Image (cartoon, rainbow, N blue to C red; front, side):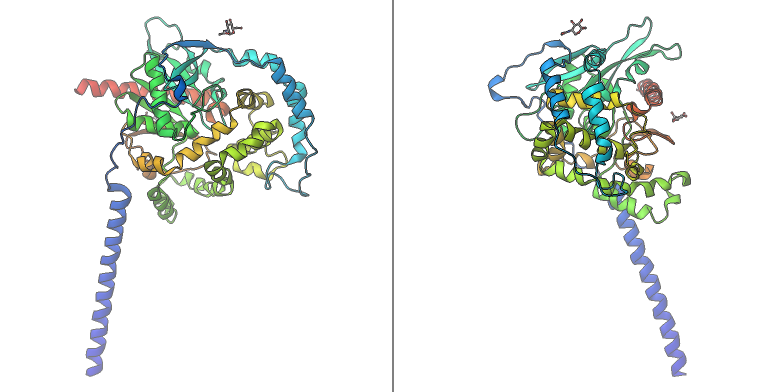
Length: 471
Ligand SMILES: *[C@@H]1O[C@H](CO)[C@@H](O)[C@H](O)[C@H]1NC(C)=O
Ligand SMILES: *[C@@H]1O[C@H](CO)[C@@H](O)[C@H](O)[C@H]1NC(C)=O
């Protein structure tokens, strides 16, 4: 008898434990869901829209817009060729490796010789000047940009700002500009494109004091558009360009009419936790055809050393890259190869003999860094974006309400499913999934990229007019 009561009590308490466990679990799930998805955005910070980034001594506002051409002077070309030809012998790579230890020097001579002996400097100088370029002073910095404004009767001209990233430049967009600015019977608008060099990149001045991170660059870029007479406009960005464009949508939600991005990433603790949890049952949260992109994501951890270096000591790294075109070439090419396809690391040529870029395209981009002496200042954005002050602004944690269209290339360096992207892009209108392409989409697949941008702007415009109709 006693035994029976004991057994009944045991069953009862086990039941209770089970019940309370599910309660605890339910609370954990509820708490996590609230923390991950329902907590309100932090407040939008107030930035000084006139903050001066140039030397104090030249504090005068100049609203002029001056035509600009890139020049490759004979002195610069001769010095560059001399440096390329007179490098010290390379250390041979280990037997049988690809790019696992970094740039494989077995193929470095091929690139260095091409740059020194075959790259047609004068012809490329003309090529780089094929679109009208200008400079104008914004907050103390001369900002360089391309501006192509097509002529079209009976069509609305729609301004679009294009923003590049690192280690890119305005060169990423040269193949796309003609597609983007084409006049088409099937559209009632044409795009006027403004392709800006971010501060510290190429022919845009760098800041002279600390603090010019992505949020502050967003202000500079918005002020640039105002200078050109555009109070409302569309934006497109990849890499840092997409971070700057996110900040623009947060700070100026009524001015940015729509944002197209080819690199959408939510880099918060919450997003990391959510991504980790999702990885246990991925098919509940994304198309099963995309699950292998989570596996591909792992490649990023192997490649992120540069990020730590550039976000802590960009200037030290810059000394060698600024002095040696061979070092600049090896560094930027190795990063570009990985960003195009992480699997490129397996090959002796880093995938560079079979990728979509010609040598000239790659060297044009290097020339923009070399001719402007800007590699050091271009890398400082990593340090600024990781500073305490920048983190305090909370830009990554603030949700954007601006209509956003994302294109996800197959080999983009990080993939996140819509559930996570919605943590940052609250108004994600559409996601285009591509089964090819990598991190430099405009450069790798200009037609696909341009068609996607044009489709996005078309949809943004229709959304806008339906919102206006309702008001
Ligand atoms: C830029 O180059 C073009 C073509 O050579 C020339 O017509 C134009 O005047 C130049 N502009 C400047 C600012 O040098
Ligand atoms: C989303 O984009 C795809 C192409 O990537 C397109 O076929 C589809 O119509 C778009 N959807 C909307 C709602 O615009």
